[in-house]
Structure formats: C-alpha cells, structure tokens
Image (cartoon, rainbow, N blue to C red; front, side, top):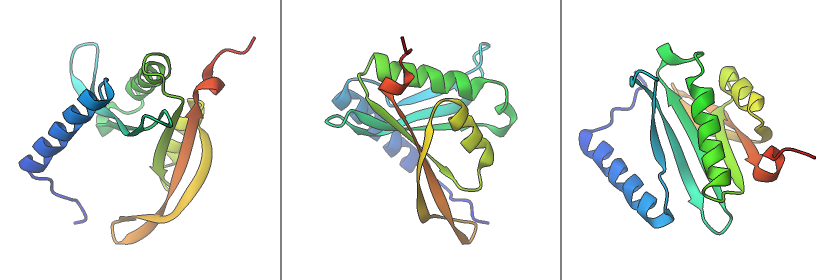
Length: 145
C-alpha cells in the first residue's frame, strides 16, 4: 500500500549511526519531542551536517494527533537556536513535498525562505513529486539594530 516497512535492525542501525555522528560532530543530531507531561509526540533530526560549510538540514516529524498544538514550533525554534548559537551553524535547510502546504506555511512563518525546487525528486504512492527547499541563515535571524 505504498508504506515502507522498516525492520528493527534497520532502526537500531540508524540509531547507532546517529550516535556515531553525534560523537564525531560534538552535539546531538536526533531529539525526541515531548509534551510538558513527558508524552512523546515526535522527533526532530539534524542531518547532512557539513562542518566546513557550517550547515545542516532539519527534519521535524510529529504524530498527526499532535500537530497544530505548538510542539513543532517549539521544537523548531529550540533546534534553530541551538544550531546557530551553541553549535555555530551558519545555515539550515529544510525539505518538504510540493503538496504539503501546511509544512510550507509553517517553515515560511518561522523565517525559512523558499530557495528552490527539486523536480520529481520523491516517488510517493506511485507518482513523482517535487521537493521544495527552504533555508534560513544565521545572520538573517539576528535582531537588527
């Protein structure tokens, strides 16, 4: 039905890879998003970390029942703040499918600029879809005097 099945060993392998990357770059790359009550509501991932370019890609995954409640905004701004002000990242990138208008509005509202389109870059449910690229640069987020 178009849903990829991931084995437990593949999940363990991914977690081991994240831990190795965390050790190599000196900071975490995957975060569990929790409510104030401690309920797990999603995951935030910092990937494609490029130390020389001081850039990385952000992905946020929320369970559908927790969307629209501020968890994504809190997680994104916390991750952006840590990346820019603690880990000295200069540039962050986000990708989203062309049909995901909610994600596009979300990232635009959080000062990510639409930078480009990767044509037919993702195969979903039997059809090719474009991927939109959004970016945010550290200097653009600093208060202007």
